[in-house]
Length: 150
Image (cartoon, rainbow, N blue to C red; front, side, top):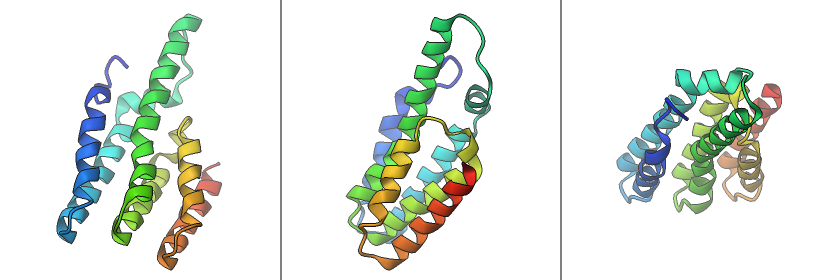
């Protein structure tokens, strides 16, 4: 994407946040989750991302195909860490935090998401296997919002 330059740095930044969520210090985990939430929302809420996601691209077929591939790649890169975080987290507060971030993403930007739904649905399916009752309740809230978005 020409104007959206987060792509090359995204994996490193989000990897650092995920690493911090494994801290034994709860305050560090909370800060990392908040930073992750803000970062994901900043990318999905950027003018460039919003315009590309909502506009009907015009131009040569190859240009449109390249543009859609770039948008798909970025959108999935931004959303997929939530699934990774949920499945790899040792602390239930981090697992709940990943669901809260997903809930925020869907509330704010759900109508603009096109390509990351398989990752979102896979994350929600894994919530059903969670032993923590509060995670199931939170996952249900996300699912209900998901149904209303579509």
